[in-house]
Image (cartoon, rainbow, N blue to C red; front, side, top):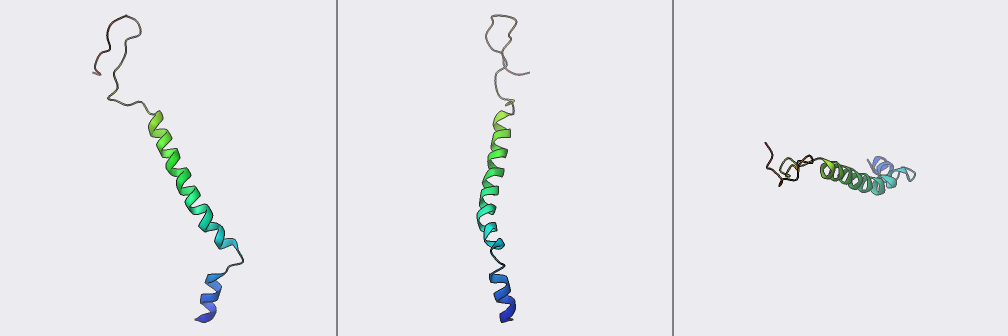
Length: 60
């Protein structure tokens, strides 16, 4: 069992990169989700009629 613990504790350095890349990739994913939601048109926004000079109307 001791050999397996040592093997899991040190894999030549590649496993330490997961401690760095994991949170970075998580934050990048959250930022992508936030950007796509921010760019999506909101259904509660007022629609403006660009053909006439009237006040904005509520969405249908």
